[in-house]
Length: 55
Image 1 (cartoon, rainbow, N blue to C red):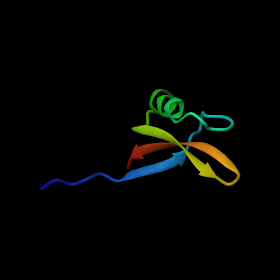
Image 2: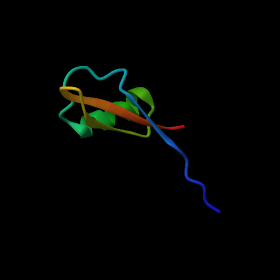
Image 3: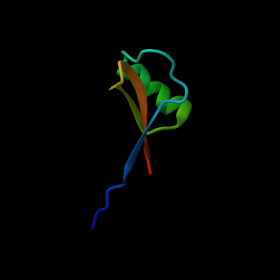
């Protein structure tokens, strides 16, 4: 039996400004915040970097 882990997201603690580069966000989340991955997503009137963690 295989059990999938839950994935939690939170806004990056280290990314500043507009997030228009998902690859850059992904790299920063992995290196600086030890996340599984990261991506840019719409938030309010702009785009923010979100990091994803196994929880």
